[in-house]
Image (cartoon, rainbow, N blue to C red; front, side):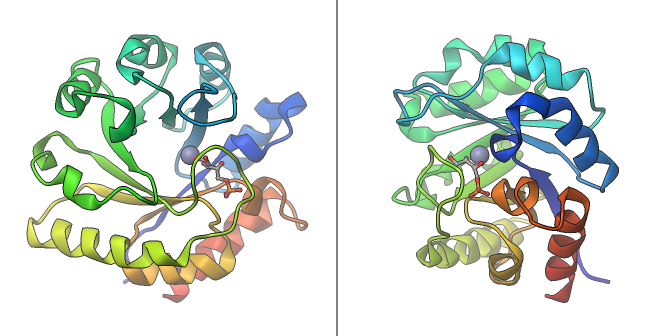
Length: 223
Ligand code: DX5
Ligand code: ZN
């Protein structure tokens, strides 16, 4: 039996006038987590949402909330996001001076800790952090916007991380984020990803959210 690939719809691509409805539809269609992109206009050029929206989403779903912090000095806001309902919190190493401490703090707060790697950031930054990690988020676009094109050059990074995790018998989840659709799913799953974050390919799929998740699941299982 093939490995279960987790699907995390990114609400950044949802209709913001009906976020609750979009989240409910994604849950009913079999999503495994809900991915929430937080952007501060500093670390990335765009500004998105904050803890109050996480709190609102928490009220409409029982799925784990996977909060991706694209913000400078994320350590300042960890308590706020976990209190708002984040179950998983990912930070960027480029944004926090003491990454180890930040990961420990996320875990102390009772959430799972993730590190998101920009396309230009090597996996070596994680070398001494395996015990603190629950999730690695390989950015397959430059963070800041939905709807961008998948960067094929990230496939070797996913493969290296998969080998490293397997060599260490690690259960850390290996997620990919950016430009994930039915086509790129096959490639990232073959490279070793076991979690897919997808925004446009789910919330803007012409055949609707449920069919989008079913088609991504099919593509992941084809591998
Ligand atoms: C990009 C975000 C992604 C984004 C992905 O900065 O981290 O989660 O929503 O969007 P798509 O799937 O449209 O590339
Ligand atoms: Zn994201």
